[in-house]
Image (cartoon, rainbow, N blue to C red; front, side, top):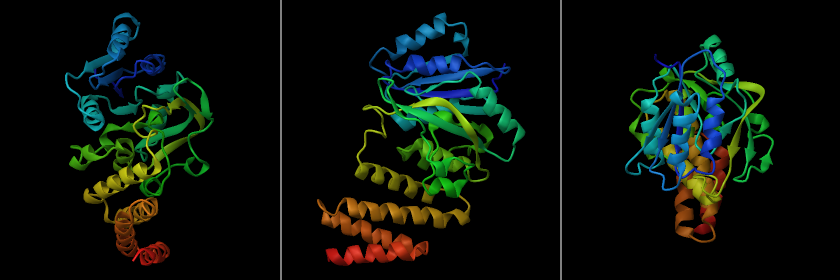
Length: 305
């Protein structure tokens, strides 16, 4: 029987965390069919043995569709592969180092999406922990993100925790734009794609997952300069894809802001790059009519000439 919900779980060397991620899914109390797609990107630790143990021994082990790639696909290659395996009308996200806390999570979010057809996805707040289960923050979301979010909100830095998201498969472009495969911010790019037509629904006062920050995290381990560089690359990719014209100025505004920040990041150690990014900021701030950041970038650039 075709599942109503597919859970997309990518993993790589998550032997310390994968059991909690799987248990958070298998404890779900639902009245519909579920499949758990676990895409293992050629882990070199015991991740595969742990997953296979659940397949063989857990009462709901038949939910699990586990594949270990013979060669490493990379994070985005693995993510795209896993998304393409999902057969459900709805897709939930949970990476192998995060985990769900409430057994009614899927039922709650699916019920909302069924009753609110004008929303493409739903999300909620999360706790933040480290690799040793130590609590780092009681809330992942700042207050500004605790609301329904549209494309403009997401562009302007409103956050969505990946492990909280459930979305309609039909809201995702088919096929996915080729630019999607070149970003490191696959989750953020995905949310932009989902929000072109309809916003995301925020579940107020519902914390149903733990988001984990750890040394091996693809994003949390980056320094400020590298995060700005990766984000800028993502927005240049978004700028290339087919999207409503009304959104272009917001993408340009974000490119201008990130370019300005990178100009500041490189002021001390690479003045040539710093000048390049301040000039780029001026170009995109003029395109998006951002007078303030145009002036700031011009002042910074003149000081370097």
